[in-house]
Length: 79
Image (cartoon, rainbow, N blue to C red; front, side, top):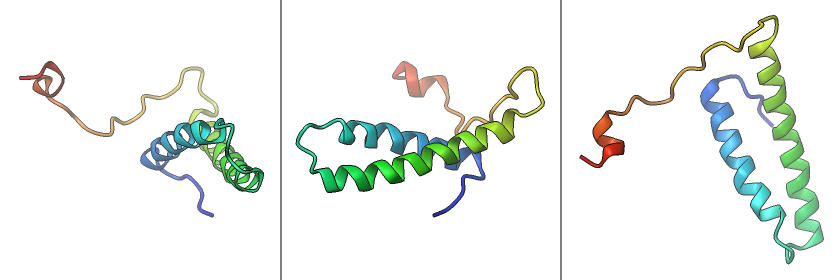
């Protein structure tokens, strides 16, 4: 499996974690599938934590994270 090395990879991993957490909470998910998904979820979670630790290490305040995309006000105002 790959390591998280960029902000974009971190964002993708966090989105995947939210989706997978919803799947893991489903009561009818077979135990075998739950065990496999949980193992991958734990690995991704550890990778995100390692990236965050490296990013924020030695700083009193977290650095500004790069924005993934610049949007104009028309995008969210509906113009």
